[in-house]
Image 1: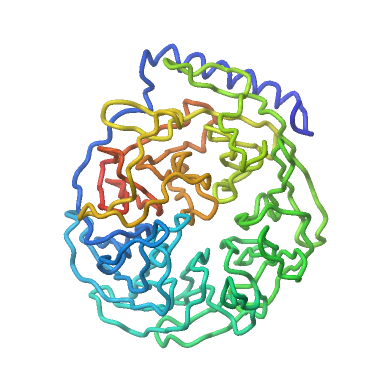
Image 2: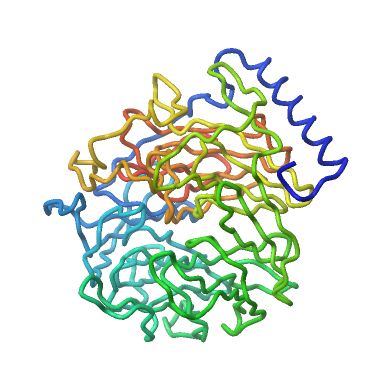
Length: 500
């Protein structure tokens, strides 16, 4: 067995998963039920390229995009500092208002699927907050009036994995610190650490600034631990930068910015997303061809449990007509990956006791149940075009570059090992899935949205998908939005509303 936990319940789960897959394939015929075409309500072209998620608040949709891009490409990229925040009508997609968010550093456009437009806006009853990751934070009313803004000199690199949260009319966000993480060199300017700030939404003033230094690559989350709201964060070296501060996990109070718990971490892969699973800090480790997860007890720093997946307990492989339980075979063998079986760090997401992820070498969505120890992989398509479903890289429809609405190429780096060839899961992709009514809405990068029912055993029957793709040019980097009637997906070129 590939995991270290074994029980009768687990063995029964394996048998049931196989039976469900067989029954589901018998009912399906030649095409999977999951591939049903989405009913598109509207397609609203966007003024320029961008990649933020969509913030839904009542009848408004909020997103960010670049200011008009007209400059030449350099090294395959456009470079830009200034972006625009827009408010659009939820029902029609019509633009209601916009505000400029000028930046202080001209960074790469859509680099590693992260640029100055990446951050998801946040909203509450009174305000909406936007950030240009290259130097500006702005709070507005829902009719577009600026309440306050904050600016700073943005550093290079412009890959910043920060997020924004609203709690009790307070904004929690990471901003550059005064302390330098990496000294300047001939190849690179000075890179600062970051710190979490809690900002009063009415005045724009700091309520607290956490003393804990984090890095530009820290992907923190909001959770509850022992009945307390906490920010889950860490300090972890990157493969290309050593910060000299050890490996530390933090549970940071949303009320004070101080530690609720602070503990040492075992080795973790860079860019991992910081989350709790069953009240314990999830560490994604490096295990060569194996996948390794550890759950660390915040009170003591001890490793509570470890899960090692050499091969999944059940793998549902697509045969061309249906899914069959088969031996897992890695799909991608790029030299850069060196046979690693570790997850793409940006894709590790916790829902209850389950960990969902993609492996670097895999065409499957993977699921580990930390209560039973069972691991299940389900092969899924990486792109759905009007005339075919694409299950592998060989058939994947590439563009000659990432194009904006005006059909100008704004980025030519579409074939990197960082995930674009996998259909959307780059190592710094900031999009976090949305959980609503037990369904995980998980945005892939090539216009394909995966819907996973987390209330049932993980199998092909639990997965469906929706595609906004028409010609192989939709790159969907940000989070979707969902209400009772519709799903909203944004590509670099357009906003699409489809019926649920």
